[in-house]
Length: 106
Image (cartoon, rainbow, N blue to C red; front, side, top):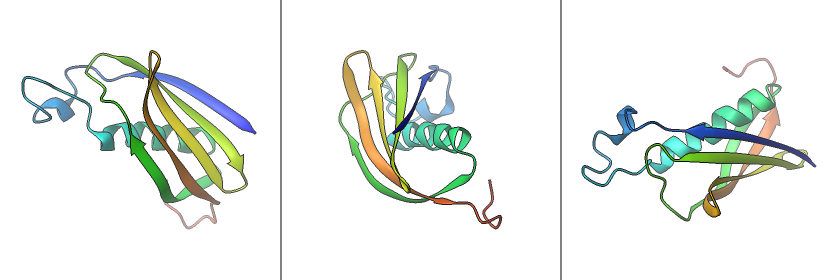
């Protein structure tokens, strides 16, 4: 199994916080998923994402909190992922991937 880990921090100035939520900002789930997706595509550039097979949001992330994205290549076409902040799991899930054919856009 191949594994990859990367640390990130979404600053309070990020535009996603403008309306999510005033007075109590949290990182939208789609933003966390975007970080996972971008990390996956940069780690395994010969693959494209076919399907988001599963995603479970377990704990909110606030601005300026450093978090870690962990990727595990568990089989030929499956990547499991998690996002963690300190000792808390924020998000878990998996992607189905496929080899690029040259027709996919980056």
